[in-house]
Length: 446
Ligand code: PA5
Figure 1 (cartoon, helix red, strand yellow):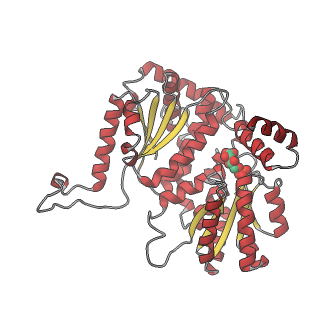
Figure 2 (figure 1 turned 90 degrees about the vertical axis):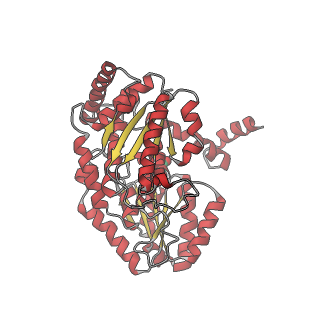
Figure 3 (figure 1 turned 180 degrees about the horizontal axis):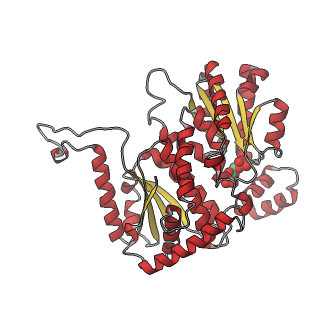
């Protein structure tokens, strides 16, 4: 169960103000629940935990087993933004940090990502890896027209067809895309690829609990049923019309702090495994709220690492920051610091303590220091890093994002600003239909 702790904000806000913002959050919750706000045709993510069919997971497992029988040891997942970050976050969080360097047989293929950048060096180095391995690919694009994954997929498709033959390549490619529209859909139909559908009513950044996230997470060997169970627990908890609803608490406090000048929210974790939770969360909140000249700017850090780089600014820079700390209550591994007879490093005061106890004290010490420095802190606690708790976190942050966006007065489910760079890029690359814009841009670049 995800718990929100607002104690780190108490010296920054008045209780009566928080109560008023809880009332506003409950009104925004009603808008999400009654589906009568702007963007209400994109609320399909709300009931995914309670409605996802067992057959979807079984289908994903069938692909996993079929590729295993072919000896596949590398799966390239191609996608960007919402078609990439959820799976990347889950797989990074759940995998052994050094999984790919450890010796011994692997239970699941290595999952790597492509199509989330346009770097020539990245794709060439990926091809170097693919040439050494037994490969398959999953290409994910809701629109089926996004340039970055389309470019990567063209290269990877050609490699798979050259290496394994066209028929076998088709067995090693799965597409996740719209049911009817887009180049990826028509290409998949033409080539006979197995295809999973992203429903129209789920936006990219809310799609981690659809096949967009489910297929890569299952292929990487993780327990999607447990993740959906954790999400279901939060689907129930975050639907309650009460102050006890954790999504209401989080949305209320972050909006209150924003209205008090805290325009930047930093998502903090003290486990490097959660680094990509920050990346996923930044897209979720940045794309949902950053519009109409409004919105909290989402940033993320990984402590204690970044205390040695960003710590100075957070402690002492412009006072427009708030922190949301994802607190992991229990470590999945255990390591005790031993006493040393000579004590040359002077660390015997730590003898007998777990490394995680040092981490916990660093976390407490940072909380107090940052509060003293004028940075309020919201706590979001999970019991441990596993599928169940990650599923809960995904759902919690999504629901709170919908509530928070409506509190802010924006449509949290569109992303009109994402198109601007694409139009310029197409014009500069000479895409047919963009000739006039290309001329205008070339003038500006002179
Ligand atoms: O949240 C969003 O809508 C975007 O980040 C998209 O997920 C991203 O642009 C990828 O789009 P698509 O899945 O259509 O390729």
